[in-house]
Each structure stands twice: as C-alpha cells, then as structure tokens.
Image 1 (cartoon, rainbow, N blue to C red):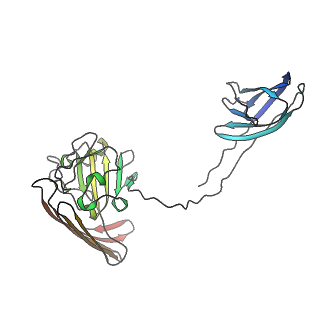
Image 2 (image 1 turned 180 degrees about the horizontal axis):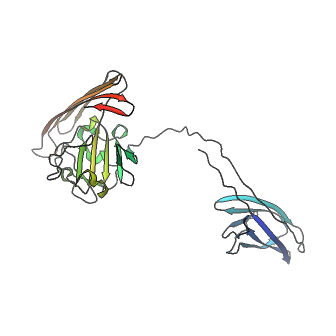
Image 3 (image 1 turned 135 degrees about the vertical axis):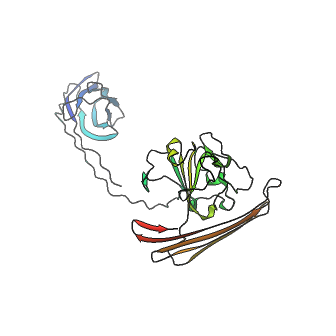
Amino acid sequence: MKNAIKHFNILLLFISIYSAKSFAQVKGLLQDDMQQPIQNASLFLNNGAQTQTNANGVFEFKGLMQGSYVLSIQIQEQLVKVTEFSLLDKDQNLALGTLTISKNIQLKEATITDKFVQRNIERMPEIRDNIIYSGKKNEVLRLSTGSANLAQNNSRQIFAKVPGVQVWESDGSGVQMGIATRGLSPNRMWEFNTRQNGYDIASDPFGYPEAYYTPSVESLDRIEVIRGAASLQFGPQYGGMVNYIKKQSISHKKVSVESVQTFGSNGLFSTFNAVGGKVGKFSYYANINYRKSDGWRVNNDYETVNGYIHLGYQINKKMKLSA
C-alpha cells in the first residue's frame, strides 16, 4: 500500500503582536502559493489554543500570555508544524516574514500478514462472457467458503448473507428452493429466471416459470444472483436471475474423490459422491446424490436421485470445449 500527502505551500503574512495587561494577541493572514486566502483552516498552539481562518483567510489568537509557542496548521486533514515563536514582551512586535511550508511524505510499502477471513459473498466482474454486469445489483455465493447445510438445500442458510431475499420453505424438505427479492412471491422461484450453467432449467420460463428442479447444492461451485429489472435480458421475470454454476473439477490431480454422508432428524439420509480431475488438457467431473427423508410435515416424505457429468478440453487459453 503506497500513498503520498500532496505537496502544498502556505504563506503566513504580517503577523502582529500586541498585549494589554500582560496578555498578547496574534493576528495573521493565511494564503496559498497563488496568494488566495485559505478558508476554514484550523490553527493550533501547543498550549491548547486553537482558532480558524475566516472567509478572508484571517485568523486571530487572543489572550496569550508571555512565553514560547509552536504554531501548527491543519488543512484538509493534513497537519503541519509551521514555526516556533516567543512572546517575550508585551510591546514586542514579532515579524515572522513569509513562511513557505512544503510537505511531501512517501509512505513505505506495507505488507498485511494477518489471517485472511474467507467470505462467501462476492460480486460479478464488470464484463464476463460478453455480458455486462456493471451497474447491476448482484451477489455471487461461494459455497465452498460458506457454512450452510448443503445436504438439505437449506435456502435460509445458503442465502442468509444476501440482503433482501425472502425464503419460502413450501415442501418442508429442501427439495426445491423458493426465494424472491423486492417483496415478490418466492413460490418455486417463479419470480427468478432459474438457470444451471447459464441455461434455463425451468420447464416453461416464459409461461409457467416455476422451478421444479434444484440441483444438488453439494455439487455447485457457486450461485450467481442478478437482481432487478436490469436482469430482464435473461428472461421476463422481474425478480432477477439465479444461475447455479456446477463444479468442473475437484482438483488438479488426475483423480480426486469427494464423498459426503449425512444423517439427520425426520429420517434424513443423504449420500453425495463425486469424482473428478485433470489429465493434460482434459478435465472431467461426475457426481451422484441420493437423498431421502420423512420431512417435517405429514405426508411430506421424499426420495430424490440426481447426477451430473462434465467433460472439458482446453483447446487454448481463450477457448474451451465442454459438454
């Protein structure tokens, strides 16, 4: 981190001193190097006295006793020690002349080594994949750094840090997410254009846009939320767009395996298993998730199975073929 305090000049002119009954007064004019008065500058003496310049750049200290003082000036939050002067005699006239103050400080480079705290809320770049996100209200949820219950697709925990999101747990099981913003209806996310990897997954996004399918959250890399009317480029829903981005690999190794087994109340059992890796320019990822529960409502038991396969080939730095 580097910063510099800007260079500036201060001219202090015709300071006159007079006293009455052993008290002195200091009066002066504060100007910049263009001989323009400096308004609302703060002036301090080391005895605690302080004053400000008026609209004409004039300042005045009253009721000073005989002694030595240090005068400092603060302009735009920059404090500069100007000069030292002494009041030795009540009849003394002290002419400081013209003072030119230059202050140019180059700060040393600072390295922050404190522990980094990961946060799972990010923002979309201004432009990505020929789509302009600049000026659009958006959030990117990194699921790998969050603390939500992914095994149950717990919408309240997943979107807890996104302001303005309403959650409706209609099925009591987390099989289908139900969220909305701006006071719109969260029923089956029909106010959001729902996508996976950039493609619509609602059965009829322009007629009946309810999202009856929610991918296994454990298989997601992130969730992109683009809100408001600015997201109408993705579909007719006024709430915005939710894009589930699947993982494309687990690691840079040739073979990596991920397995999560979850048991919970109401007969919950979830098993999530994935394999992925990279071999040269080829990358692959596949997962399968089986989940069942009795639900926390009567006649709300469910059993779901979903899987996903990704294959990719990096042709060059700017081009990738995937399926």
